[in-house]
Image (cartoon, rainbow, N blue to C red; front, top):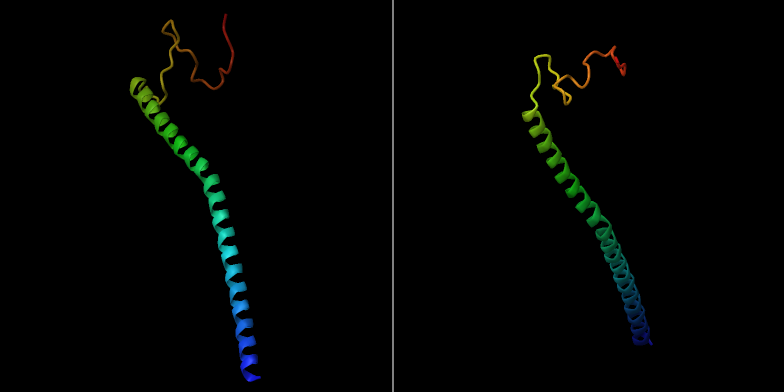
Length: 101
């Protein structure tokens, strides 16, 4: 009788261990699935960030070229001339949008 009880206890322990292993495997599969989904979402964001960094670098290069081609005048302002050689805008803040005809 004792041998039967021990065998039943052993079988119960085995079933319990198998159920725990099955649950653990299920959790690991779910975790792997979520990690794949996250990777699919992160990849485009990472690519977009790299593209944005490239655009920022290009903009910085263009700005440096522009500054080199159009140096600052003695007042610390960029010269901005119109087609006729006259200033296209006034540095005077009180002269906002007024045109003289």
